[in-house]
Image 1 (tube, rainbow, N blue to C red):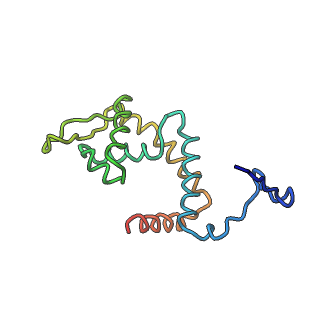
Image 2 (tube, helix red, strand yellow):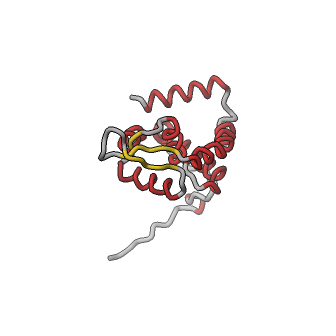
Image 3 (cartoon, rainbow, N blue to C red):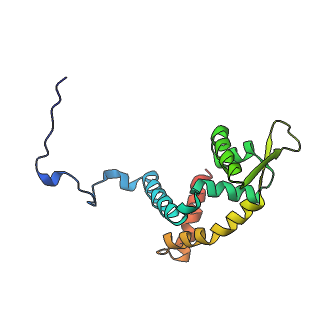
Length: 160
């Protein structure tokens, strides 16, 4: 098979690291901008909390378990929109770290209820200031009204 190398017409046709490239109509797509924003937020979250070995998604799961003690794995999976098997793997990791414990569900013998352990409670308490500082840092250019509007619009998108 013959491979033909296509040469750029000039060296300026090659985008360099740090160059702003033309994204065409992508700039006007909400999904594209949401993904760019999510990437920036997750990178900052990882920098702030990397040593704690927790991702934004895992943090969200711990908060939901804390505020819904005894929730079934199935209920939690539905609430966060992930497959039960994927959630099960994360809960396994939480158990190994002694952050969460599974108990037999009171009414459904096939299900497990999830609870934060004392260590899980302490872990969440220890990272909350870092999470709130991260949130403050990434929204520092927003007015209070802009932040409230953005939250309302994102919730509206998520709830459709």
